[in-house]
Image 1 (cartoon, rainbow, N blue to C red):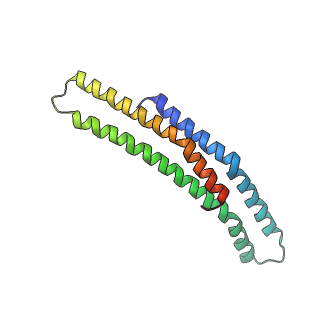
Image 2: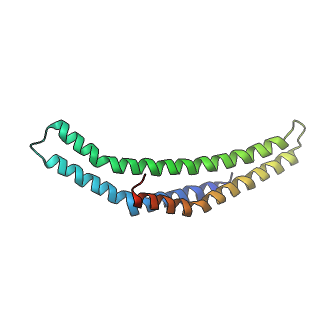
Image 3: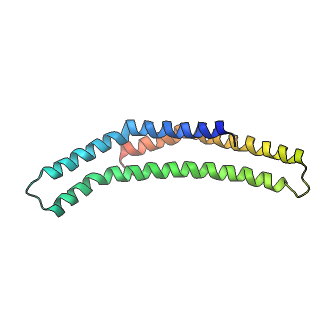
Length: 141
């Protein structure tokens, strides 16, 4: 697969993650830390009580991060399955008697197929982004 296609996927994922960080995750982190600071301000509370309070503060952010990570894993899994399918198609055409010209042709077919997988999956990211943002907004993750 071409390095340019790999770079496009990496840049698209980086844009996805950075956008979510700025629009949602960073604010959640701030709220979590402010909440934890309030827990620590209670000088009368027991250590167990303070730790429980901090755990409650962290829970929403941790759930959101797990949700985003799960969506990223599904995206990457989909891309991998597509590329493996390309690989299978080419392997089925290869034989011990394949000539160098045929092997070069099959390699080119694989590259074209894999690049198409990258482009198709990158094209899905706006919908995935909307779904993730809507889910984070609804706090149902």
